[in-house]
Length: 255
Image 1 (tube, helix red, strand yellow):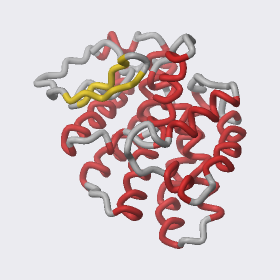
Image 2 (image 1 turned 60 degrees about the vertical axis):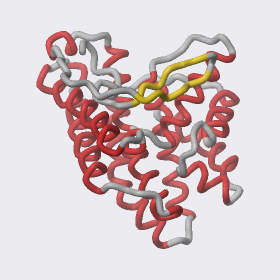
Image 3 (image 1 turned 120 degrees about the vertical axis):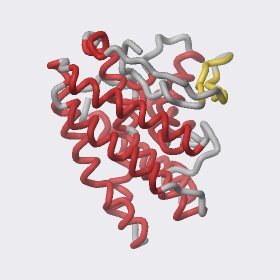
Image 4 (image 1 turned 120 degrees about the horizontal axis):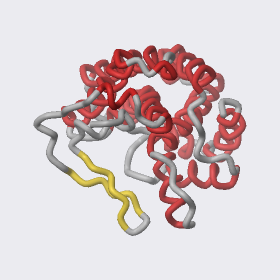
């Protein structure tokens, strides 16, 4: 590997664009992963941003997974979830010094991305690494293909969509009268604060600023794959459009 730009190195799935659609194919896990940290440290900054963007979304992915366990009884693996959460925290800590391009910090980012991919391998599903943030980000990507617009890096789109999901969960925390849902979200509020503080420090670029494109991506993102997330929770209660409108304004604050 020559750039810590995404978590696919250790993954057992390969999302490919086929005829303007993102299709996930099963694949074999790598037997060996060789990363040159010196080369990674000199990678274009956009690729480094993309790797961070892909990682900060893991908090949303795990929260969505826990929400699905609560609402649908979906299988949830505590060990894998904790592994991914720890890797994400280490990555965010190292990313504070991203501009220094220190190989020891780059190592933490690389290890986080590999750990995320291994979580996918352990569960046989992208659930530990992909939730609302990926469903929205990948929908924006497909929309770019559909409308012949330039594409952005996967992690850039996922990073932006992470702030959208954070806005939705924060609003839900304030307004929800279900004590169990509130308690679940409350566990993640410090993680949300850490992500937002990181963004204020390093300014991961955004992929989407147009409100109509943003909104269409969020609404369509709910059905990007059959996966219960906060998008489905809100849709089932007739709140998705209201929360999308709110999330646009909140997301743009961190641009």
